[in-house]
Image (cartoon, rainbow, N blue to C red):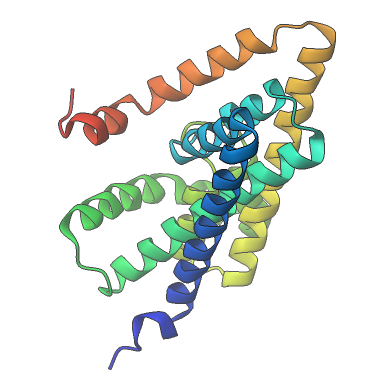
Length: 216
């Protein structure tokens, strides 16, 4: 007999994602009343991360005058929020707690991508998962990393510690790269635009399907 949804570990992780989302909405709503530009930056950075553009989210924060602690902390918060949802939904769908057709279809595509990448991680264990999440490639990142960790039956604590530390390391590297360019070459705007374009091109099919309900 199955446990009730929110008595499972994944159900609690999903609830954590909901609480983090509620807190994010409260913060954005608060800034919308006192500083609309900050609210826009927070919202746009969230959407950038949603489509896998962590570099774009970091660039947005830097361009709008966020300091290092706030930029790194906020972008890490967004990645944790997204992983809470995607990891829990992946596991709950895999274990037949969630039976929604469009969610199942998304999870099947995510599973296929994870299967294609997991051999790269399996040989090196924790450090392999850490490096996989840290590397700035289209198929890498904490979402894919956490799913691969689950597939490899890596302990949840080790899975999340590897994906979390890999994500934090990537965010720190991106921040200081952007900060270096901004202070010395004043071309961060052009670099940022390029990053956004690359992120959109690498995800254009799911974006088009999400917006128009059809593939190009």
